[in-house]
Length: 105
Image (cartoon, rainbow, N blue to C red; front, side):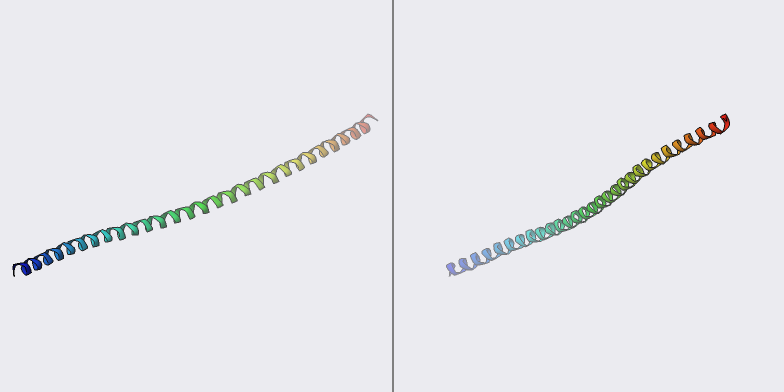
């Protein structure tokens, strides 16, 4: 009879230990699930920030390209203005020579 009581007590003790272990494991698993959720949120924030940075970088590239295009057009227009100015200078010199001929005569 003692043996059967001891067996029952041992079974109860082992069951209690098993319950404690399962409860501890459950708590640990809950912590892991919470940590994974936090990691997922961080990953989402990182992905969002990366997309925003990509968008900003693309906008900067577009603006710099537009600035370059405007600068190239300005150089072309300045070159054209220089040629027109040189032509006008030559025309003015010719007009001045012709006026001198008329006033000298």
